[in-house]
Length: 66
Image 1: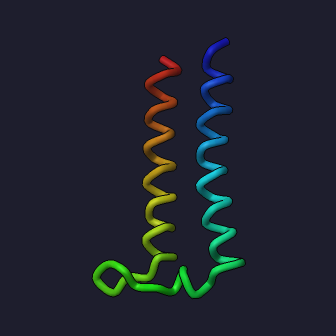
Image 2 (image 1 turned 90 degrees about the vertical axis):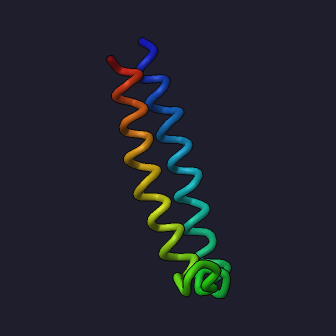
């Protein structure tokens, strides 16, 4: 019965990060257009972070579910 609880926590964490992405996109588009690293916009970096986080959380869930 532990895995459903872990799944909800991981989903909640991802949802929180994703809502942050959406909020920045909606309410601070200038911040998302900034280019802090090698000319890459924050929106692209944040999007790549979301993809990486999804893989990381999936791997973590697989490890816990075994």
